[in-house]
Image (tube, rainbow, N blue to C red):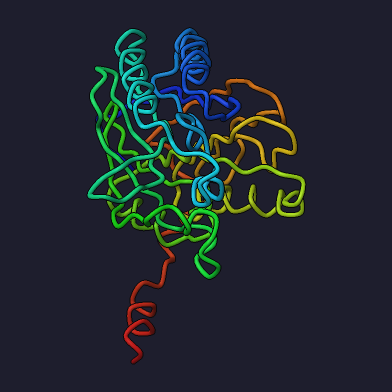
Length: 275
């Protein structure tokens, strides 16, 4: 799993409240990054749409519009903070490209350079045309970037409902998946248990680490957490509280059971072909 020369690093999740006030978000990101760096973190994960906020239905209906200048300035702020603290970051933000808008995650290196951009693939509201699907275009690729010698992939929120991308990231060399998330609301409290179970399963079935960072706030549906290759919870944040959690990620750690060694890839290939 990962690169033989890679060493364990401390990874943090900064559970902050998401809003459309990008200047305030930058202040929270600065405080969280300083906190994480002070605890030895080399990579910090922030929530989905941490820069610019997450309001797809209101954007779609014209009640508000994303402030692209503020989002761009916020990303520049994150890049400067990465250079200052010598810490990499994965942060959620909207992205415009080719006349389309994407719900994206930016991986920024410790030198402040953007290492990779992931566009959310699994959008909510695909049948109704509302929510994510009413405003965003879905992504088409699964990039893997490297930081401190560790291969890392990205997923966003609802992606954790589907196991296939995680297996692809594993095969592309990822030892860690960073997952910005923004899931809250009284009507969705029923799904809290299954959402956390999905993240733990994604880690265990691929024998790697998943660092999921949710936004803080009332009726937060799941905690930010870091899961290990055995599906063990290495760190878990309290609900409805702005905080930073940390855990060690060791790319050479082996699970207690060789799950992938029993994977019946040959059978699946036949079934997918319809043979």
